[in-house]
Image (cartoon, rainbow, N blue to C red):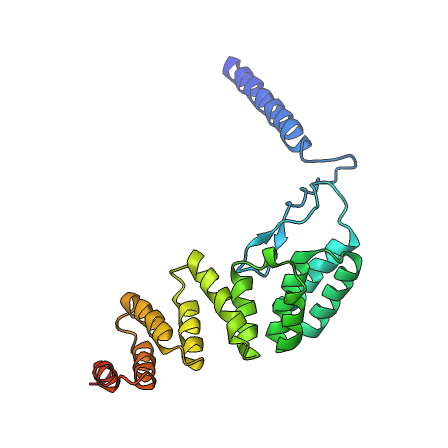
Length: 230
């Protein structure tokens, strides 16, 4: 009988402990009316920049203004390739916030994806020069190349490569462009840098050989081409 009484007392204590825990633990995650609290939004939203995070001026607990919601809508539409709608939303954002440089850069990229290279370049040329950096430099250079404005593209490629020397894809763009300008020695120099990193890249070596031909170096070109054939 004594053991039964002790067992009942322990059960009662355990029940009291559980109830107290639920009230103190879960109570912190509830508001009045037993509604679970919604965690505040993070201070960043997804950006088209290689899955990065673009900080927007929205603090936890603040209401999200229309222009921020529209900006994010423009981004999301670009992700699903609804480029015309995306551009339209970017334009609305920029009418509200004409000095929002980041939105201009993003819209230029969407215009590029859409194939409207001329307008994309116009948007970028209206952006402060100090904002043109990183991937945006490459985008602007690509747009200049598409317009055959090689002299404007070259310094952009070179500045980007000065900070990202490992980006061989961009170096290849520069090497090709230089060959189109008949700057053969400069082009060959860039091809050699690529081949130092990727000596077994057959296509790069063949392009290198072609530039050697154009540069009047057929013997060297023949040697390079033999390396790419069985």
